[in-house]
Image (cartoon, rainbow, N blue to C red; front, side, top):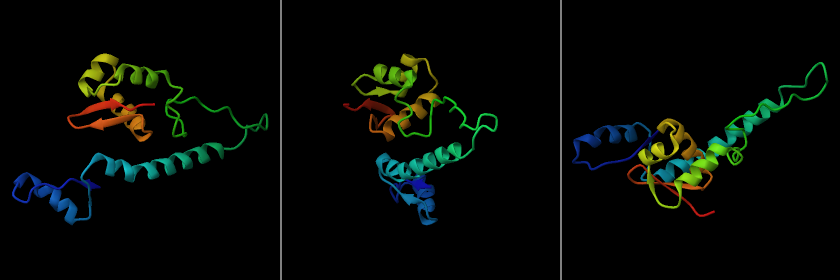
Amino acid sequence: MFALPGSIHNPLAHGCHRLIRDGARLVESPAEIIETLVPAARMLGGELAARLQAQGTDKATGQAPEPVPSKHSGSPRGWQGDPEYQRLLALLGHESVTMDELVRRTGQSAAALSSMLLMLELEGRVEGLAGNRYQRLPD
């Protein structure tokens, strides 16, 4: 759990302060949260890939089953071959853009875009900015 501290004089910050007292990690920027979550996400992805690989072989042929295509494969860079991610990067351009503008440009839901943008942010392709804005980073 993460909490962003506020002014001790602001009554709206009391909840965050209580969370910090109860053991939440104090953070001051989104980068601190990402820094904490990236190793866990990679570890879980590796475990999932190992489980899928260990599912065994096909009893009839004695060979491993064909992998099932997925938008989000166990590979941290599984998005690279996905045309939806490539389209999002193209529509994002190189100027900062709000989530609302991305919804209009792509026709996708904010929830779907949030997931895609998080994946791109974890890979260093997109940066989340203040005001729910996103900016593509140089290749």
